[in-house]
Structure formats: structure tokens, C-alpha cells
Image 1: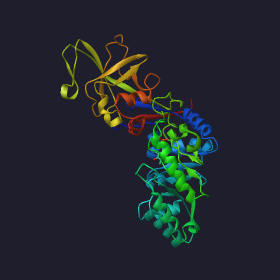
Image 2: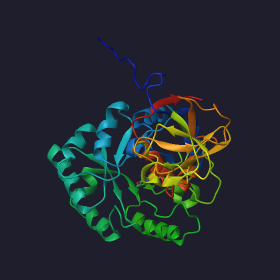
Image 3: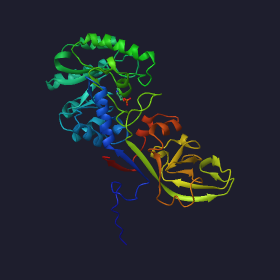
Image 4: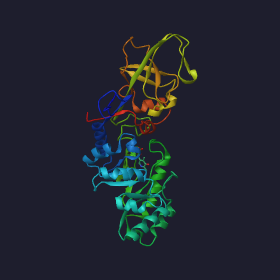
Length: 376
Ligand SMILES: *Cc1c(COP(=O)(O)O)cnc(C)c1O
């Protein structure tokens, strides 16, 4: 017997264990909101890690249509994948810079590296010489994060490299804020001061400083080019403040089994939950391999309408159990979807419940959901 399977995750059929809805209208609204807040600065889009898990090609395409021409990825491989999906006048910057040996490919592909060290600067300069062309680049200064970028002294050293300003077209001087989500943190002001000192060495080069949190710091933090990521995708940029962004992501997960168990029944790996009374349990079709953190076990929840359905026992790789006793019997059946992210549980709320941040929830969502891109 021949059985042909035509179903794909792109079709509106019950193949996948859950549906990840990406609201491109909300994404675009968030972009225009950030453009407004960026005032005189140009607003780029940070689409690293597959646009925080939402699809770099899809996200970049709609933002390009709305006027965005500057995109940031973290790894060179991401730039190589994104390049063919965007028109040539879109600039793609690689935040982590290039590994030795990738320079010629980057030059040919039209990808712009961030020069994070004197070594990277020398290699890029050598490539420009070899190809006998001028190559674009951005310089990153480390102003207080000690992660990527050059210290003040190293920037000065690089600027003295023979031919540096002739062979390389320096588009931006970048730095990254370590504490931009906390407006009261004194490190923000310290980094701004350090950035001004470095910028004084390159008075003709525009500055790019603000990530999402930096945009909300406003004023001098905005520079000439802002680099929002999380705010585009609906995350909160500033802790302890209401989130001004529209939610972009919804996640619904299917019920794959419902059972009633007596009091004293162990649930899941390790028997980490034992029912205190007779309970109705639903098993849903997503687990930690789908980006639902293990520490949602015995603490997190799903929602059905307004009803909170606690996660009971440990989160398995491919499924987890919720206690649905509070719902009238037969409310949920095979194929019903419960909400993991949506109007009743925001991205921030599920991140809090898992003791992590929205960035980690988004970037781990995984590939097993049906992805539904909508323009609400
Ligand atoms: C990830 C990243 C951003 C975007 O940060 P958000 O907090 O998501 O807005 C901007 N700049 C650099 C250097 C980054 O690594």
C-alpha cells in the first residue's frame, strides 16, 4: 500500500503540536514606534539568532518594505544566509566580526563586519589591499561591557594603521550598553562618557550606541543609528516599567491526551508532582525541545480562556502535563489548543515564571511548531 503524505507545517492542518503565530503588523507597528523614539537617529533592526527565533528572512523583508535599510546579525553565517533575501541597498552588519579566513567571502557577499579588535581591523584592511578596493566596516569600542570591541587605546592604535581611513570606509562607531534595561544604573552614564572620549578620536564618524533599552534611555544615548532587537519582537526593554510595545508572538499548544487520576497519583519524570485530590490532567504537545524551559515544571501555567491551568510535574522533552480540573469536563479534547504565550500570558510573564528573560524564551522556540505569519 502506498501512502503519500502531503501535509507540511506550512499548511493549516493539524500536523504540528502547536502554532506559533507571528504578527507582522505588530512587528511593523513596533518598528515605527522605535523609529519615532529614535528621533534624529536612523533605526536599524537586529535580526540575529533568526530574528530572535521568529524568522530573519520574514522579519527583514517586511521591515525593509517599511524603510529599514540597516540590519544586524551576530554571526557571519547568518549574514551569508540573509544576504540573498534582501535587496542590495540593505546593509548587513556582523556584530561578532569575522573569523580569520572569512574576509574575502564577506567582501564578495557585500557583508559589513564590525571590527572588534586590532587583529580583525588588520585582516579587513589587508583584504581591501589584496582586492584593491575600499571596503566598508564599523568599529566597535568597548565602553564597559568587556565583551566585544576595542579599548580606547586599541582604537587609537588601529586608527594609526597605514591606509586605515583610505582603504576602509568606516560607517559607524559602535558600542553596546550593559545595563540599558535599568534606567537608574550609573554604568549607563559611565559608558556614555567613555563613548564620547572614543568618538572624539573619530569626529566625522556617526555613533551607534542604543539597543532597545538604550532607545528608552533617549537623549544622548540615541546617537546616529539605533539597534533595537527585543522591542521589535514585543519584549519589554526596560525592567519595572509598562511595556510600550505590541505583542508579536502567540503560542498555542495542542492537547494530546486527557485523563482523570485519583488522589495520590505521581505525574511525570521523577514523580515530581503527586495529586492531592482526584484531578483531570491534560498532556500537551510541547516540551523543553520546543523551548518551554524545564523550570516551568511545577510552577508555570498554560491558559484556556481566562482560566489558569498549572503545569504539574516536570517538563518533558516533547510534552508536559497541565491540571485542567478547574475546567468543566469535556472542555478540552484531543486537538484543543491551550495558550502558552498570548493575551493571558505575555512573553514577559512566561519568562518570569521560568526565571529567565524574554530573549531566551523567544530564541529557543524551536522548529516544531507550525509558523503562522499574519498581518492582523
Ligand atoms: C543583541 C544586540 C542588540 C539588540 O539588543 P536588544 O536588547 O535586543 O534591543 C544591539 N546591539 C548589540 C551589539 C547586540 O549584541
